[in-house]
Image 1 (tube, one colour):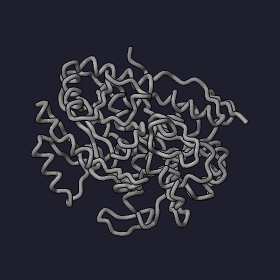
Image 2: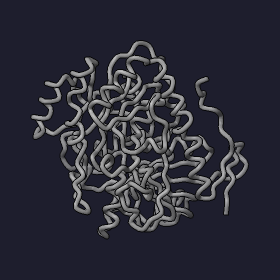
Image 3: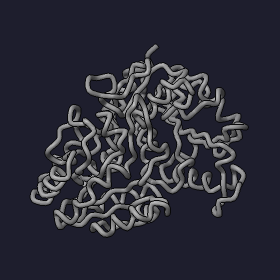
Length: 409
């Protein structure tokens, strides 16, 4: 059955529930945007869009890190602030994984409203409670950790939470194609690029070039992975290869870095090699702070996790997508994304230090051209209207035209 959205108000619009971790990662504005883009994007297309998140009781803490109830924890406060900021308070809920207790919309009302959604869009299989996820007409899974997801699923441990979905999307654009080392693990993966609601991310004037920036965690949540006799490292292992880039170019480089005290030697090396290291809480504690940081940058420079690089995954960062939308060029480590996005203007990739140095010189030397090209690339390839319309078509939901974002000329 196909549903037709009537944005003039005739008939019930299809209901989509987006599930994902946001409060589980409080004070991470960049992560919040990866969830908001789907919810706000579906809403732009005329759907009734909800955001629902599960959290374990053991994850709920107060500001001092002590155990707290769902209602009193900092995670719930962060959830509420983000939902209120984007007009989602009445269509969102934070649910206790063990008990089903709900913060936001009451539990009974929540299950009654979203329990039979037209579409569950489940980021990393996050939503598992049957009263919320079980009754959806179509269940779509989004893999935003390519490589990790497939290795976990292949292991049979259930850690990837892939079971029970009808269609599978991945940010790893090369999965299933020649040259990519990530297995399909028996699933048909549909590539999708990270969407940007362009109206939320207007292009900023280019002006004079300032500095290269990024926001990063030195080590990921999952650690180094060994699979099939190969070892896949973390972002720390890749970044170390490019420490000399500031000294070799004479440009300013700044990284808002989450790094453990045990990595003090790496922190010292970064600073010794000319990197300005700042507090990610200042740069990205909220979605608005993250947006200001990106739009106040000259361009992005970033390495990627070894998992994404060494598998030739075709992974593309949602953070980089927002730099491009803001009219900020990006110089990022090659993951094989050039098979799917044009590179060389606005978006440049590198595999060696020499290529990184050359990319820096190209961006700084023709900054206005690269800034304009960055926004055009976002408009053509990352616009949430087009990307989400494609997802809805895949699952049999039609939607009506929407107002333009206000693209550049």
